[in-house]
Every structure is written in structure tokens, then in C-alpha cells.
Image (cartoon, rainbow, N blue to C red; front, side):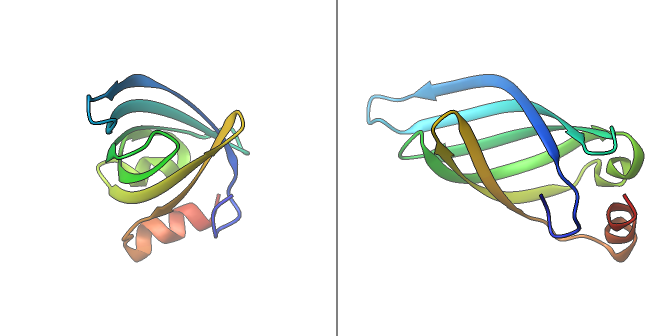
Length: 105
């Protein structure tokens, strides 16, 4: 759920590399389907000292409905894993137009 009341689920796949010093390099592509059936596709990248938590950058590649306005936007995120799921907080600098598009969803 975001601060505009949008919620949905992500499916992600990609490459995770664990280096000799136990640091993690992550490069995954994700598909989000929101509660109204709109979709966005993004790539998430991060470098971290551990797999279970870290910070990185998400870039929106494509989208339908209100998510179209996010194409090309890069946001910072922080993630943490718990059991079989991951939870993340995303911070984006949005124009008023993009904010309006997302809040109308």
C-alpha cells in the first residue's frame, strides 16, 4: 500500500550475485499489478552488505493506466525480507501531474 491508497502485488525475477566478501549485487525486473488491474514494469538495482535488507534504485520502464506517467522515473527504495515476502519503502520525487494521476487510481 502506498500513501495514496494504491495496493497490489509484485512479481520479480533477475540476477543476484553474492561476492566473496558476502556483499550482494541485485538486478531484477518486476511487474506490479495494482488493485484495479493496472500494471507497471520496473527494474530494481542495489548493492548491499547482506541479502535480507538494503537500499537501491527502482526505475519505471513501462506502465498502463496511471502508471504510464511513471515511465522514466527513478526512485530510491529500502527493502527488508521477512519469511517468504519482502517489504519495501519507496521514495520518489513526483511532479504535481504524476501525483494527481496516481491519486486518481
